[in-house]
Amino acid sequence: MPTALPSISERLSALGITLPTPANPVAAYVATQRAGDLLFVSGQLPRKDGVLLHEGLVGRDVTLEQAQACAKLCGLHILSQVEAAVGLAKVKQCIKLTGFVASTPDFTQQPVVINGCSQLLIDVLGEQGRHSRSAVGVAALPINAPVEVEAIFLVS
Image (cartoon, rainbow, N blue to C red; front, side):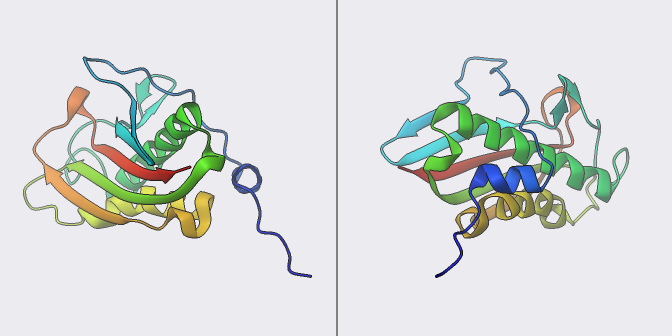
């Protein structure tokens, strides 16, 4: 008899992860928007207990490793928003991530930074966490955040 795959809650527990409280929008938008079977998650910032994990530009103020940790924290916030909107058990597939990295003009490892979020989603969601992705360098992000990530999910 084949062994059942672990549930998302079992994976979170095995990874020692507790999802943060979903962040409230800070302007005139909603945290998530459902359109049919698609759930759009607004850009999430790397906040822990309401404070940015790191601030500034990657390549000057923030190291590559710190930026990856920020991307992972953005991923935790994305999962938290999905859980609040529809429940993680309803995720069929992560379709797309778009990651923004506030970085110096000579920093070119934006994809490596956003891997912090991508790997988290694969670790938590398994094959349903595999996605297409863009990783973009930008001059600045809201409140001096070094990373912001938004996502689209297929849900039931």
